[in-house]
Image (cartoon, rainbow, N blue to C red; front, side):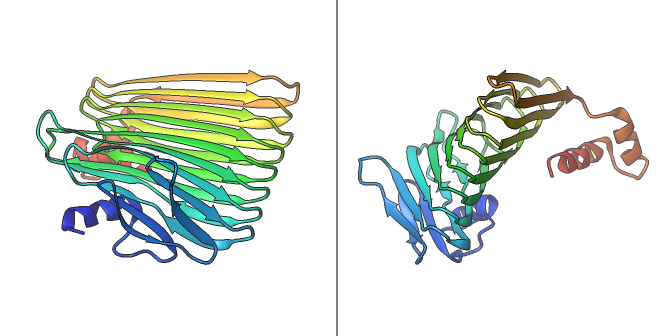
Amino acid sequence: MDAIEKDLLMQIADLHGVPEGAYNIRANGQSAGRKSTENIEIVPKTDGKQGIDIYIKPNTKNESMHIPVIISKAGWQEMVYNDFHIGENADVVIVAGCGIHNCGGVDMTSRHDGVHTFYVGKNAKVKYVEKHYGDGDGNGENVMNPTTVVHLEEGASLTMETTQIKGIDSTNRVTKADMAAGSEFIVKEKLYTHGKQTADTDFVVDINGEGCRTDIMSRSVAAGQSRQNFVSTMNGNAPCKGHTECDAIIMDDASVTAAPCLSANHIDAELIHEAAIGKIAGEQLIKLMTLGLSEKEAEEQIIKGFLH
């Protein structure tokens, strides 16, 4: 790998070399490295689609895998499908993410569309970390459209941490989940847009089993003339607890829309939505500026703390 590709790997997966454990590194549509372990098997798809199937054995504990994607070839566009089959009682961490470096000129668009589907077995536990990052000369566009589909069996748990903080001109982020009895689905989203960037986020969660818990939390900052649209649909079809929250800072000439939809279809479905959109408080800026920071530096510190 060259210096640009190594930097992309560091940005999206904190990798400075070959990771421990199972991994699959995809670069410009090709495999740049793959390793399976005794408990985690990675298999290229055989149905004509680009992507991989990941099989994690039942009772696998304290193991992790990395599946980053990097695009350094200007104008490269792809559609990738990755399916995760997590066995019963497993407890694993999966680190994904995509980094694009585009120096292809004004009319050149680099694009990665990915569909990740999780089949989480009974009482299994998964932590899924996904980072998106873009770089380049600022002329071509970087586009990412991630779709995540989650199927949780009884007692299963998936915690999803997603971060997009730089360089993505357009993104359509779709997450769908269905939950069986006693399962848990937690989402922590962090999003930053600037310039004329656009970001659409759409969550749909079907809570179908008794005793389920879901918590969707989105924190975002919209600066410049960027636009963000947050939609969250939560269907409580059984005795359950569901919470969705959108907390956004708006700056300059940006716009943010939050549209919650809660549907309680059982008398014991408890669903809550919270949304807050506003500018940085003046007293916060003043307090930091009295410590010697410029207004711009104060704004940067507030945003950094907000998205931490």
